[in-house]
Image (tube, rainbow, N blue to C red; front, side, top):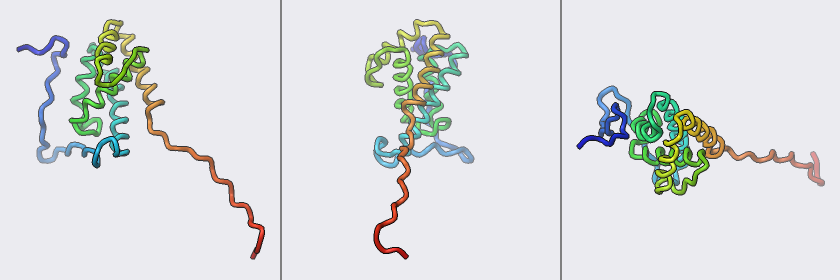
Length: 165
């Protein structure tokens, strides 16, 4: 059976890979449940932003949006710093961000509305698709980035009325 026609000719299915001597180890997974590991969630966030950047760059090579999204998943273990099995989470979040940037309803990153939204976006000119990916990356960097909480500086303690030295 031949691969689907939407796959780029240079696309190859992901292979299970074990590092050989001298090759870097794959990145570690979360410490416990991934949603409760803030450091791992930060890595997923960073990976999603990187995927959006990669998708935009790959689209300049003539790939469609879905080809680019599925192709960058292969880069997850080493380039993005998260284990390969989490690549689908990163890809789904990136797809949801692109659909939202187009002003379409995204719903769940794993719902049918994402696929429908991507199909509608792919009917647009390539330049507009790239613009939407850029907009999604900017928006994601601003709205989804983990921001440190800023608390106002505490005023200096007032001198107590009482004994003094």
